[in-house]
Image (cartoon, rainbow, N blue to C red; front, side):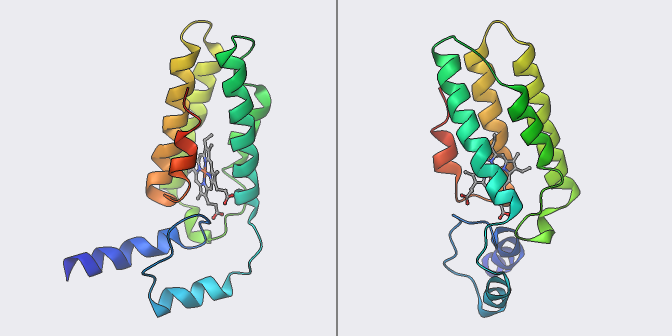
Amino acid sequence: MLRVLIGCLLVPFFIGCSGSDKAGIGSEELDVVVNNPNIDSELTLLMRKMYEDADSIKQSIKNNTGTITEELIAELELVHTANPSDPKLNNSTFTAFNELLIAEAKTLKSQTEGKVEGFNNLVNKCIDCHKTFCPGPIPRIKKLKI
Ligand code: HEC
């Protein structure tokens, strides 16, 4: 009984988060999915861009030719305002996770030493938010680590 209850509380968070496991969604939740047109949200598109940029920054840190860019930091700041697939995603917890990510990104920008560790800390901040809001892409995000 308790598990069912917890399931019901958690499921709404995962709806609309592409890549998440939709198995086990009840009929009530399915209605919400159906109402959601199958168009990628602004937030989804932004996340894909962030992923690509983080991947090329990973290479430049690995080769010791660069570090995090202002461009990626600007993208992280857009996460606050990009439209998610589910308006429920816009809440103070979501904003707090994003602020932690931005703070970590700025720390990395200021580092001349320990950039590999700084970059991995940044990826952990992506994962922290995903654990709560969108677990589907976590295995992919983990691959960003150096
Ligand atoms: C504040 C919370 C939060 C943070 C921080 C965050 N994400 Fe996301 N991410 C989401 C949510 C929510 C979605 C689903 C978007 C939607 O459904 O509109 C998502 C979706 C994604 C996707 C899937 C896109 C697709 O193709 O469906 C990828 C990949 C991704 N994020 C990567 C990242 C990376 C890399 C970082 C760190 C640089 C990051 N995320 C940081 C919340 C976050």
